[in-house]
Amino acid sequence: MRRSSLFACALACVLPLIATHAQTAAPAAHWGYEGEHGPTHWAALSPAYAPCGKGRSQSPIDISKAGSGTASPWKINYRPTSLKIAHHDYAVDIADNGHTIQVTVEEGSTLITDRNTYQLKQFHFHTPSEHTVDGKSFPMEVHFVHQSADKNFAVVSALFSEGPANGNVAKLIANFPKAKGDSLHLPEVKLDLVLQLPANPAAYTYMGSFTTPPCTENVEWLVFRDPVTASREQLDAFAARLSPNNRPVQPLNDRTIAIGAAAGVTK
Image 1 (cartoon, rainbow, N blue to C red):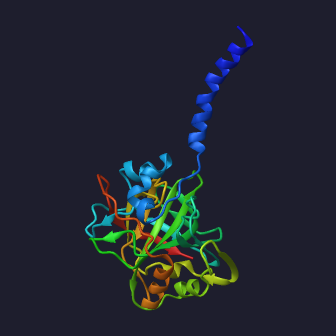
Image 2 (cartoon, one colour):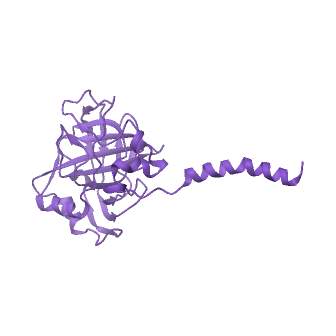
Image 3 (cartoon, rainbow, N blue to C red):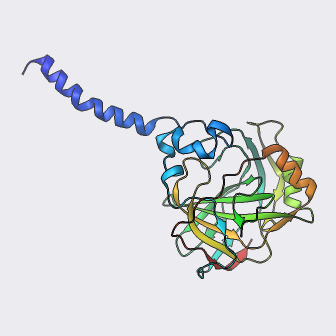
């Protein structure tokens, strides 16, 4: 066979592999919460975002108080952490979860369920809330994002209602980055993460997804039944920086929502 023929054959074999790799390695597309980059368009922005439109286990959802099952016990062990805070304007990695105020936590805090053991990586905020309860929205929601050793994810969520001021929230507001894209690490500022959870450990559980692109599914969710409080001034301060950064609720389809209580919440 001639050298030119060999080259043509090799090129014909290799080019499809290059194209396939390029498709999978393509950079993520810009997304947002409004207009042509908003939630209703996420699935069309990039092939990587297809689950945002085609997925059948998407988050957030509207939760019925009645529930439909009983969850297995789970355990939270959250340790105090120094304040490492950032205001992300746009990011594609779940550990950043763009368009939000995020706190990256120190190692050692865990969530244990009958599905897996997860390490807490970060927590971030949405205003107004992403989950609703019997159709009711809340002024803010915090997501504690966890990852297991085998790369599965779990998110613990707490909803906020207006009430007494929240000490942890006050510390965050006092140290907001000056602009989007800025970050601060303040080792002397300590956050007690347990104080950011409701006193009653009952939570709704279901299988869902990331609430931002790429909307990856198989994410274990625990949404506390009782909200935590923050003052109107504190809620307004977050809303002024973030609002709106909530994805609308998604169809439940054939999923089950269960409710259960923690076997323990310790620090």
